Length: 267
Ligand SMILES: [Zn+2]
Image 1 (cartoon, rainbow, N blue to C red):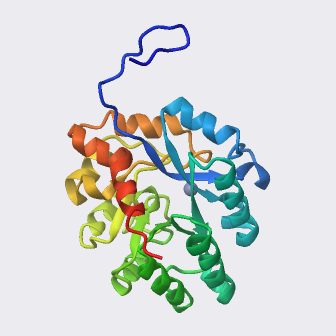
Image 2 (image 1 turned 120 degrees about the vertical axis):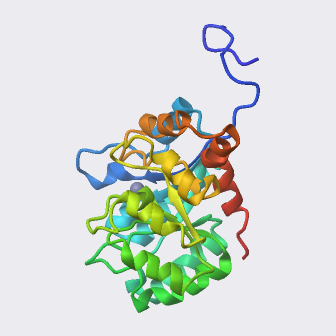
C-alpha cells in the first residue's frame, strides 16, 4: 500500500491505469514571453504532481524558431530523463531535404516516437505538396503525427491523401480559426477518418467534451494530453478523470491508446 510523506496510507484504487501525457513541450522558457517551464527539472515535477509516468514531448523552439536546434533540445532531454521523456520530432516540410534528414536523424536513429507538425499559414498548409515526401516516410514508419489544426480542412484532406499515416489531432481540432470548425465539428468529421485520433488538450475546458468524443469516435481514438506548460495541466487531467465514461475506456484515454500507437513503429 503506497504511503504519503507523512506515512499515511494513500487512498488509491488497487490498480490505477498508467497515465501518459501525449502532448507536452520542452524549452518554452527559452522562447521568452510570459509562459515559463519545460526544462528538465520542471517537467518531471509536473508529471509527479499529476501522477503521469511518461511525457511525449516536442520542442517549442522547434515549432517557432529553428527545428534542428529545438529537436536537439528534445534529444538531450530524452537522454537526461530516459524513463520519463518520449520525443516528437518537429518537422517543417518547406525545408525539403533538411526536414527529411531531420526525420531520419531523430525518429529512425534518435529513437523519437513520432512527429509534431504545426501547419499554420504562412508557415505552411497541411496538405501542400511539399509535405508529401515527409508524409510518405512517416506512413511507412507507422509513427503518430501530433498535428495542430489551423486551418482544419487541409488536415482532413491530408488524412484522405495519406490514409496509412496516423494523425493525432491537437486540441481535438479546436484552437483553429476556421470553422469545420471548432472542436465539435472536428470530432464529428474525424469519425469518417479512422486514421485520426483526438488529443484531449483544450484551452477552454468545455463540459462533456470527453464524453462527446468517446461517443462519436470511440474511446480507442481519444488520448489524454496536457499541452504543458502552455496550458495548466491539472484541469486537463481532471477533465478526463471526471468524465462519465467506463473505467476501461478511461484507461485507454489516459495511456493505453498512446502506448498502442507508439508500439506500431517500424524502422
Ligand atoms: Zn502544444
